[in-house]
Length: 133
Image 1 (tube, one colour):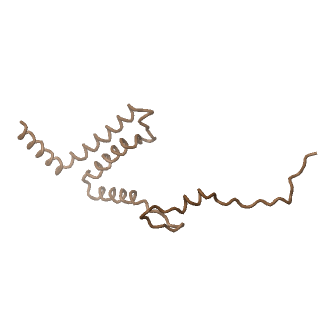
Image 2 (cartoon, helix red, strand yellow):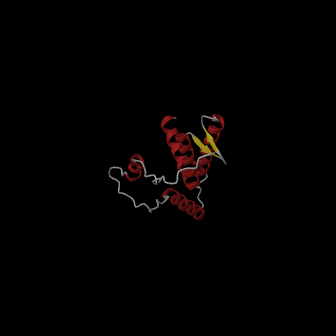
Image 3 (cartoon, rainbow, N blue to C red):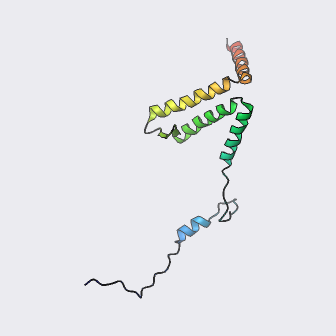
């Protein structure tokens, strides 16, 4: 006894709503419109890979220290850090801060393990103690 759906009803393809259409095509002030098929280059990733290759070639440790320092700064500013999984500051504050301090300790180690930076640190400490001591 069931009735079948009418076959004479035509359904139009849904058009994007004005809000969706406006959001996709809207260009911010001072920004050039990008073609729809243009890919945005991940320049930060490319810079990071270039720095890693440079560090492997120079073997100074400075770039690893910069990376550790950046990870600590970004973790503090975003409230999350990563060690095999995401650590949120709100969910696991002790583990979060331990990880941030670990990044900072590694950064300090990499900076001080470079003989040029180490001698600069010694010179700064000597001048500070001469002024205040």
